[in-house]
Image 1: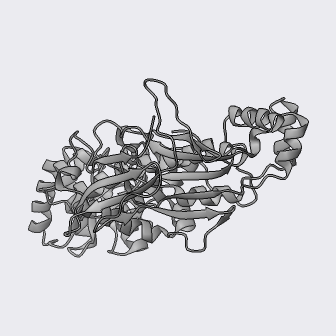
Image 2: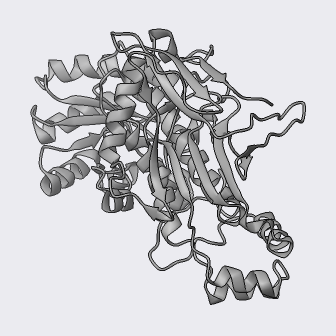
Image 3: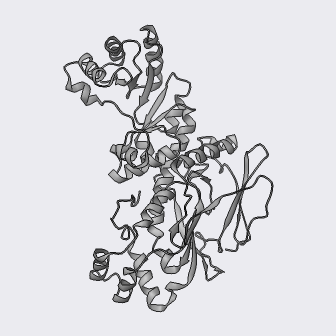
Length: 437
């Protein structure tokens, strides 16, 4: 999953990077090329297998991490002591502050192969130092957001709870909760994500709480006494049917919900709904969890399920733990540059992009211009926006709420085929004009 960066005020993020970023800088400072003006771009050559779109996520976290990208005495001492940089470069790093510009797709925007989702421009020194920081954040967050968005589509409007904290690094768990919420999840179980980002949190009890008590009725009575009837009782510790009967006997027919975390969830949901109805608990909801991914959620679409809890599949990108984004130099002193290697060729020149739509709002094409601007057409939408100018974040940075709405609108705009969970072509074709490899 790579390094995950989250802002801890006062803690430098400068060494969340790869060794070779500093050796390149060291050589460039020596030979005088460190101050050449460069443009780097972040894009994906391809989407992960089976995916028809990606979701941009993590840009907000990147801007936060950039604020702490400073080389203090401890960082410089480590770099000098280990011989990573020489004295001249160490002195240069002591005064380093990113002074370039960052433009990119807004968080929550869908992207496709070749989409220039982030552009970093400035001196070579400015830009090269950020490669690993940029990729480690965007690759993880975008992978989680894309998987989560597919689950949201599969859930067909039913609430989703992100509950993958125990399946991830402790900081990755917070980042994953943010990315899943950005993609349309309703709640997270992670309290730090709730505190840091204002995400609604949810959670009640695990099987251990039931096992702590002498029997299920005692456990259910304790939970109801503490939380009231507006709670969810976990009913599959011993026997699901028996658990439901005991839950309603203790809480009454106005219990908010029961949760099932094991078994054939399709069969269990049907049987549980019938049993709840027979007990007069017509409004008691059924929440299911247990190794759910987008395909499992889709398979439950016709069942009487009211909400889903998803964990491992969310924090691991549901089989695609990285978005496979890359960070490449495309311009030096205004001159387009490109890699020409057979299997990893790039297109030189700074890119601009628009997405084209039918009058109805359905996206038809993404046009990327390697030089200049795409020729305007009716219903075009410009995809890039400023994030940092001259080293300072802009005043109108998108919010997490903005990103959630952008994902929702983006999923509505793609053709129906683009929402299929099966493998296929990207939901929107990308046309690149004016570039040379």
